[in-house]
Each structure stands twice: as C-alpha cells, then as structure tokens.
Image (cartoon, rainbow, N blue to C red; front, side):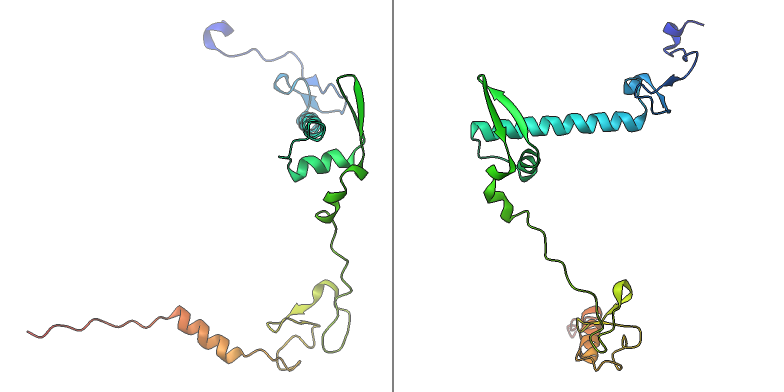
Length: 171
C-alpha cells in the first residue's frame, strides 16, 4: 500500500528515546522528547518570555505591569542590554511591591477553648466560632452561646415560604 494514498504514516522501525536521556520514549510531535521534558521546556520558555517582557516594561517605564511579571523580574538578578547599556535589575529596586507580597504572621497552636488542650488538625469548630477538643465539641459541654433554636426557626422559615392561594371571585 502507498502511505501517500491512504494518508497514514509509516510507524518508525524502533522507538525513539528522549533527547534529554531521561530514559523515556519521545515522539516527533514533542521534538523527540518525552511528555514531561517537553512540558518543562515549554514552561521554561514561557518564564523566559515573561522575564524579558517585564524587564522591558521596567526599562521603558511602562505603567501597565501585572503583579506576576514584576514578581518574576524582581526575584531574579537579570542583565539586559538596551542601546549598548547594561542594566542590572535587583530586588531592592521594587521597594513598593513589598507591601502586597508580605506573608501572614504564623498563627499559634490550635487549642481547645475550654480546656486549652492542643487539638492540632483534629479540632472541632463550633457555630459559636471557637475550636474544641473531642470531649468539649458538643454545645452542652462547653456552654455554647449560639442560639440554635432561633437559627433552626430561621432555616425552616426560609426553606418553607408561606403559600397562600388567591381569593376566588364569587359568582
């Protein structure tokens, strides 16, 4: 059979190994790389484009920067030449960005609100907003100030609206 007439391609005689020598097989569609190496290469190319565009924006003084672009540019020391001048971008250049990228302060250990026992990840959060251990998780065990009766009435009223039929006209 002719492969040109049928539109099918002939299978290769033997499988092609990835050009990065990772041990997996590559394909011509992924430039003779395995899928993981191909994804990594594309990701590196996108990051390089993002870094170059953010540096160009910083050098040219554009004001339409995204937060992601400046974070990539300020986190890495990059040299970029414009008109035979070398410009060095360092994290100290973007002092105004430090306010938005600050991390939250670390919270203390999770403690039971009644007995102050450390509960870790297994603590129970009550409707009153406090965290409790297994022995104080029920509302009658920790003197819960939450009004369950009113909350239940409101839920029932919301779920079951009053249905009233219209009055019929007398004949």
